[in-house]
Image 1 (cartoon, rainbow, N blue to C red):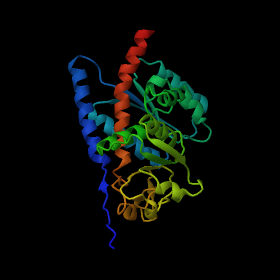
Image 2 (cartoon, one colour; image 1 turned 135 degrees about the vertical axis):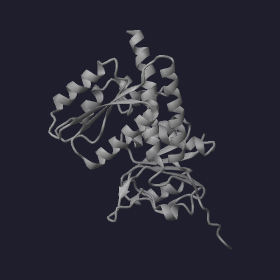
Image 3 (cartoon, rainbow, N blue to C red; image 1 turned 90 degrees about the horizontal axis):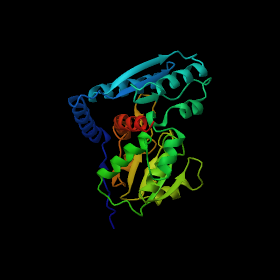
Image 4 (cartoon, helix red, strand yellow; image 1 turned 45 degrees about the vertical axis):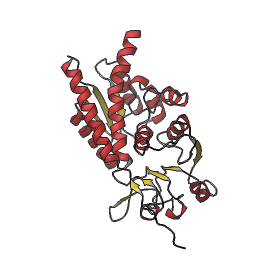
Amino acid sequence: MKVKILTATILSGAKLAEQIRNTITAQIQLRLAQGKRAPVLAVVLVGDNPASKVYVKNKKIACAKVGIVTLNYDLPTDTKHTALLDLIRTLNNDPKVDGILVQLPLPQQINTAEIIENIDPNKDVDGFHPYNLGCLAQGRPNLRPCTPAGIMLLLAETKQNWVGKIAVVIGRSNIVGLPMTLELMQAKLTVTSCSKETENLAQEVQRADLLVVATGNPELIKGAWIKPGSTIIDVGMNRTKDGKLIGDVEFETAKQRAGWITPVPGGVGPMTIAALLQNTLRAVDISTMAARKR
């Protein structure tokens, strides 16, 4: 008996992100035509981490393309925690600043959790503030964490009915894993949260109609584990010794079993930035409403 080999449909974040950017560009042009100002995003980079510099550069380019104004705050590596905290509070109180983005990771002398907690939740375009995570958990999202929000847009592109399906999320970070689990729960999937230390990880993967992997461990998930016809979202971004970017899933073997799969690069990454742009535009309306209430 011959076993039919599937070839997964590639779920391109790059194509969908372009469509979203076009929509946002039109919305901002409409704002300008109405006499309103462009959205303003404050971008804070502390130190000279090469990867962070690349991420920030890409975000600034994306903002410029759609018409979002960026205010750049490049701080030295030895910046004190109190100095960064003072800057955040200044930006919080500036009515001309709609969104605040603090690029992570921060140097070790800075308390990252405290910095995030002191960003105005209505300007927290990364969606990391405990208030925003809490709103997501309660099913009334304010500003949603960008990567999970982008993934939900990708899943909608598959036109599948996800209600009641089994989802497995591997990775428990506050940036991706936890909010991704919350997003899927709100979408009425049956969700299992795992980590690379989970016992019988292969067994958990094999039962997943939807698999989201965000561990930062190159090719941790073996292609042979993938449930035939399932959807694979690979958040991992790992660079090999020869400079090639690979994900947390064995792509070449996994795509022979999956129904849908995101590539690395070109899958989740562009959607994260697209969701950031959406959050920044949304923050304008949120801050305006908050100001009226005051």
